[in-house]
Amino acid sequence: MLYTLTIILITIIAFLMVIVVLLQSGQGQGLSGGIAGGGGIGGGGNMMGARRTADFLSKATTVLATLFLTLCVLANFFIDQEAVTQSAIQDRAVPVQTEQDFGVPAETPPALPPQDQSPEPIPED
Image (cartoon, rainbow, N blue to C red; front, side, top):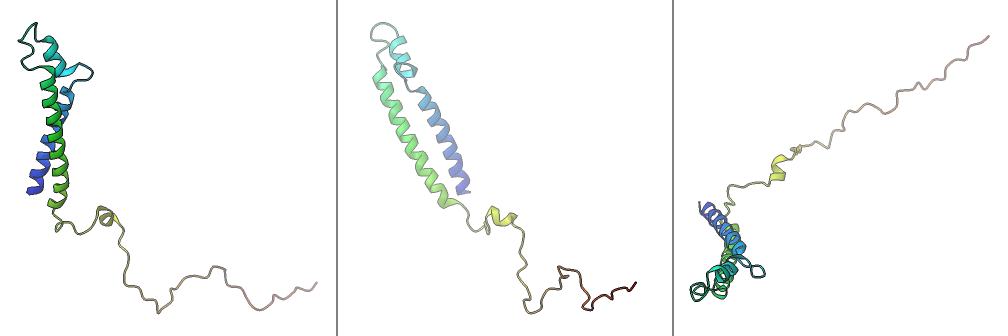
């Protein structure tokens, strides 16, 4: 339950961080450049100028990134370890026969066909 809540919070923070990063200016563009440059002539456009918007967006990025990293580390501690008994690789592995009797040799056919020990008679002409 706590793990699910943490994952939901991480997803929301990641989405917000993407939006905040995309709103940041790149060489005078973006939200901060648009408000400062397109707000009109005079004091109306400078009320929330480029400098204030850039400061807010960079601080928001820092706070969101810190929260994201902290929640990702904490999510590892909230994983339910009791429910997991084996790894995914161990679940898919072919079971090995653990009880083997090494006292009795295995009955395998010989590699070469049996040969007679007596020599064949040579036919006389």
